[in-house]
Amino acid sequence: MIKLSSNEKKYFGIRDVARIAGVSTATVSRVINSPDSTSEAVRKRVIAVIQEYNYVPNQMAKNLFSKTSNSIAIFVYDMENPFFTSLVKKLNKIAFKNKYTLLICDTENNIDKEREYLNYCKSIRTSGIILTEGVNYDLYSSSDSQQTIACLDRSVDTKFSTVRSDNVKGIRMLIDYLYNLNHRRIAFAGAMDELQTATERKNSYIKSLGSHDIYINEDYIFTGHFNYETGVKALNYFWSLNEKPTAIVCANDQIAKGLIMEAYKLNISVPDDLSVVGFDGIVSPYFYPRITTVKQDIKKIAKSLFEAITLKPSNPVHDIIDVSIVIGESCKKIDFE
Image (cartoon, rainbow, N blue to C red; front, side, top):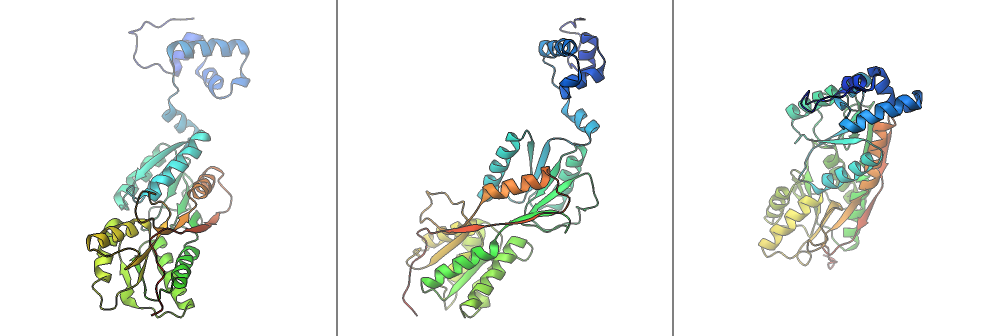
């Protein structure tokens, strides 16, 4: 076999492997990708060169020739939200086990960022893109055969597979729970028409109150994003009302945490003065009081999203993942008013 001097070249490519082993580049490719299609003698010769020179195949070039790659991108709406952190960890574990690479794209719900990330994913031939919740932009089309797209809590195109938790059931369980604790003045924090998740949870709040013949007080619905700041602002708003709510349903746990922290700053006791519930089930066990919340099955969500991308079903799959209620220490039974 031919030998290369240490200073002959810094980059060692497939052509170098072929030249040293005395075979064609096509043969080297077959040894790497389909070893059974080559003879044992050729395999040994090529593998010996690969091992001696620590050759690593150029994955980018490989993607260009194969028109796809074992990589999946996830466009994340809010990286500061622990729900998405947990989802990324579960998804990455599944991807790694199945020899896929997970690309994490922090879009911040920004159309320019989404466009740049989308173009990059197309350029490296990702197997597919997972879109988490966010405002729907006119960037994605089911006619674009380059990308398989699956959506979490987001409706972009009817021909894309979707995954979401049972938001309606989750909020209904929270309202039923508070109702059984004798709460009738129940408010909602985190209404936002732009996000599918927020809309489903707010609508379920309204419908669930109606099922218990509780008057829908528009003053008890606070609009805001899924973050701590909304919880802080919501608490101050609700506590400024003449007729204050006795319980608040927060659209997610981040809002609930912000609301509870602000309550303690104002010497408002949770749950003695106010009961609070959240949604997601990702609050740290060290947060006090432990928040009563709806737990999303992140493991099942991740599995469903991964399969929607990698199995490439001929027809879109629309999965609704079941939820459960976790009883904490943030609610208290009150006397009938």
